[in-house]
Image (tube, rainbow, N blue to C red; front, side, top):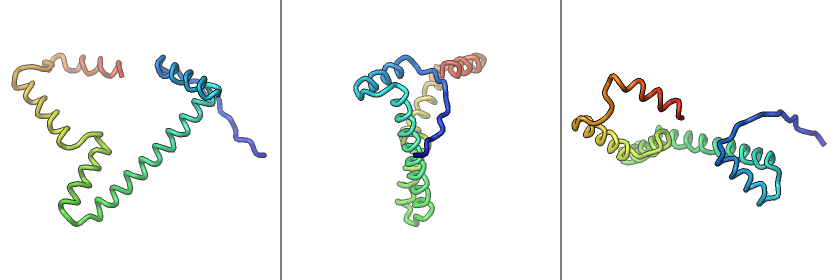
Length: 122
């Protein structure tokens, strides 16, 4: 029976994720390592399916001739890319513009520092 080469990796997990892995391992009576491997394999497979669905949708979009179908498929592609509908994105933009018009928001001279802080938190 051929064996698959194993590669050792070390990862740091957020405490909440580690707790969930521990719970899954106990409930399923598996090692934490086995649970992590299964979750990663499932995630990779799900990502491949999502990519294929995107390309299938893009093909349908390119082939569409009816303007209503083009708009519907374009909106679907937008949700794939941005995770939201065009209407939801436009609503957020309108809210932002309204806030700026009211003088709310972050002053230009503070914006870079604020964005740097957000990037560090991510």
